[in-house]
Structure formats: C-alpha cells, structure tokens
Length: 102
Image 1 (cartoon, rainbow, N blue to C red):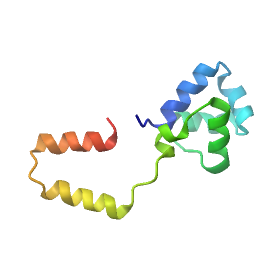
Image 2 (spheres, rainbow, N blue to C red):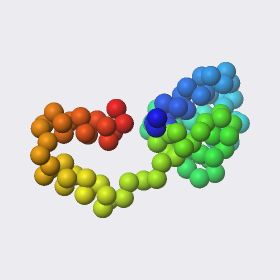
Image 3 (cartoon, rainbow, N blue to C red):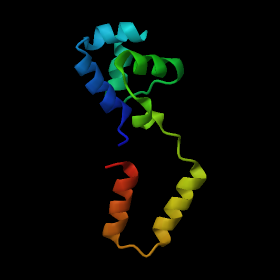
C-alpha cells in the first residue's frame, strides 16, 4: 500500500522515540523543516530524503515520494477516458478515490 510521506514520517518520528528535535539533528535539517514535512506543507528531496529514510527506517518505495510521477500525457488520457467512459457518476467517484489512494 502506498501512503503519503508526511503520514509515514509522523508515525516514524513517533515510533523512534527521538522527538522532532533529535530527529531533525540526526537528519541534518532544522526542526521547523521537519515539522513542515510532517504536516505535508513541504517535501524533502534528494540526499535529505535518503538520509531521513535511513535515519528513521522508512521504506521510501512504500510512500508517495517513492513513486514515479504520473506523466501529464497519462493523466490527460485518464481524464479523457473517465469523461467519455460509460460510467455512472458513482463509478466515476469510486475511480477517482482509487486513483487518489483512498
């Protein structure tokens, strides 16, 4: 199951028992930056993301940040399919929830 990185991060910090200050120090970022990642207001990338995953034992591939981005062409084709498919409104809503991972 793919989960939002901010959700996995919050749980991992809590389970680590280090708290936000100690975690941020070990990850090489400010406590404010860590808190913004935990709230989903920002996302880490590159070496910072890798370091955070290593420090907290996060499997990046099981989070939203470990997934390849959807190409715009693919997204447009999907929207076109949903718009023109013979689906009921309820089926369209269910399809959108599945796409969103809910």
